[in-house]
Image 1 (tube, rainbow, N blue to C red):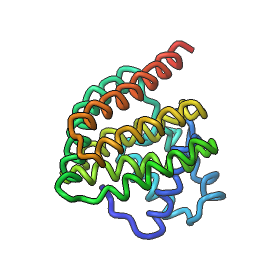
Image 2 (image 1 turned 180 degrees about the vertical axis):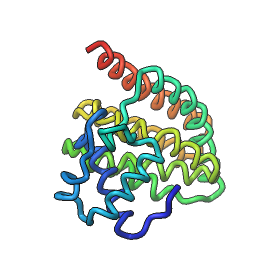
Image 3 (image 1 turned 90 degrees about the horizontal axis):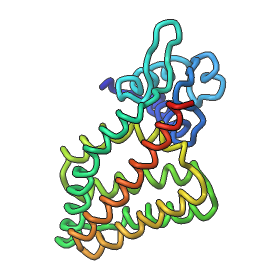
Image 4 (image 1 turned 90 degrees about the vertical axis):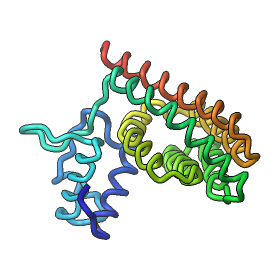
Length: 219
C-alpha cells in the first residue's frame, strides 16, 4: 500500500469518517471537484487518499466515472463473514488470555464506554469511531499482529461502507450491549466465553448486512 504523508493521512481519516457515517452511499460517485470543497486538504493529498482507499477495496475506479464507493453483494458479504467468525473467535480468545497474563484492557473498556454513550445519544459518527476503536483494542489485546492485519483487511471495506445501512438507535444500543458483554468476558479472562460472545456478535452483524444487501438487490 502507498505510504501517505500528513495531509494524505488527514484526507484518509476524513473520507473514512464520511463512509462510516453514511455521507457516501455504496455506488455513489466521489467527484474530486466536489470533495475538495469540503475536505480539510488540497486536491493532491485528497487524490492520494482516494487511491489508497481504492487499494484497500473501500472504493473502486470505474471507466468514465472515476472513484465510486464500492457496493458489496449479499454473496460477497456472506463470504467475508464466513472468514470473520473464526478469526474473531481467535481474537477474543487471545485477548482474554492476554488479560489473564497481565495485559491492560483499559483501551477496550474506554471504547466500550464510548460506544455506550454514543448509542444513548444516537450519535452515529461517534458510535462508528468508538466501534472502530473497540475492534482495534480487542485485536491488539490478542497479541497477534498477523491476525490483526488479516482481520482489518477483510473487515474494513465491508463495515465502513455497508454498516451505515443499519445505523438506527435500536441497532446502536444492541451492538453496544454486545460490545459490553464481550469486554466483560475479556476483562475477566474468560477466553471461552469471550469467544462464544464474539461469535454471536459477528454472526448477528453478518446476518443483518446480508439481509440488507439482499433487499437492495431485489429493488
